[in-house]
Image (cartoon, rainbow over all chains, first blue to last red):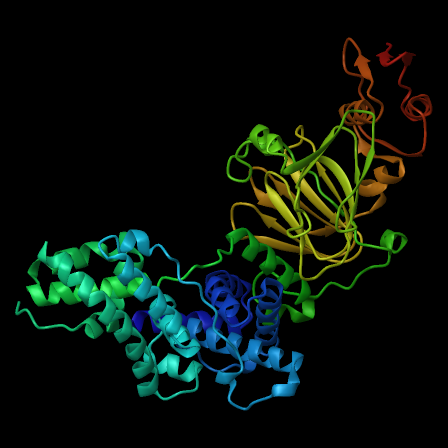
Length: 193
Length: 347
């Protein structure tokens, strides 16, 4: 972990010094996460690509005055979210709430390969599971996504979502517990046989 | 090793565990080993945690490396990112010398020549030409020797295709502006900064946002070159990440065996004259003259031994084969006879 952080610090420093190689590396490596995360906030390919380009342009322009980044991924995810929300606010200024977390949905589609994964669950249980997934709040989906897919730490998640560290944890485990309850029954049957 | 009780939450909190579930190939083995030492309760919790993670799996819209690369090229064009250290290079930005390019002010022009551009054999990019064309998803425009062709693309861009050239692009060209080329073509690209226009050849790819440019990729040359008249383009090596930004009146060569050389200034008409029917010879030897005339006029040459011409210069606008041959004869003393579609060199 420490190695990762120091690698990031070094790469970021090179970026700040205007090294094109550092720019290329960061761009190529971070684009996929920024893109997928961005699409969940606002599902519009062109809009997201445009936002990423704008963000990189801003960072590149003021590179010499940028601060340190011990996690480039986290820094860019945080920045791209802010950028997207800002742009969305500009598009529809009518409902400009201060709390950005209420300003957007977090659209994910859970891949229903449950049929395969949960082959040992009954139809009712599968349906229950899908129902539980649908009941997750947008914020829960986002936390789950940031945590499980983009591998962020709780401190980072809470910062990105402007909530307390403990709230992020609670939201995640609250969502998960519903799934757990449904799955437990199926698993007991599975284990017995 | 004591078997500490671990809850479902503990597992979900364990980054490595989550990764091992999501990307089974990478870390699975460590957890398979752990699994064996675990007690029954842990095993159950682990199984539960695994199922929870899997049921939370999200449909992801894949973004292709190609797309990211193209966007990076566009980014570098827009933001003037040059190779190497940009903080020091700032003062070195090329001041453009006035020159031919003013003539082409309507748009940028790129010329590039690619040797051995046997695109369709390149399995990485286009697996199989025949199957692709049969699925009707690719549009292929081909030109024989002695002919030029104008192609209008869906996005409003226009391509002038030179003799003995092939242009290939996807039927849904509008969403991803990418063409593949062998031979030579002149492009006038509609500006759209969100959708970079990419010309691919076997060795390199050129990215523009909205310009006109000329691409040359005949398979009897062992280098590729790109020339810009106005605007800006990014030329990248297909294999490495090496990228060159070109400004008006500049050329860069990509040698099949050595890669890019330094970008330098050139005389545009020598490289893009063809599109206006201007055939230009610059220090041309006989081989070069023969090759160009064969291509332009679809003629054959006949000779016992190659005549020695080392440095012929000439510019022919809308000229017939007869007139061009006369021009060559006038300045080099070349003796020839024109017999239908055959140039017979006399001694």
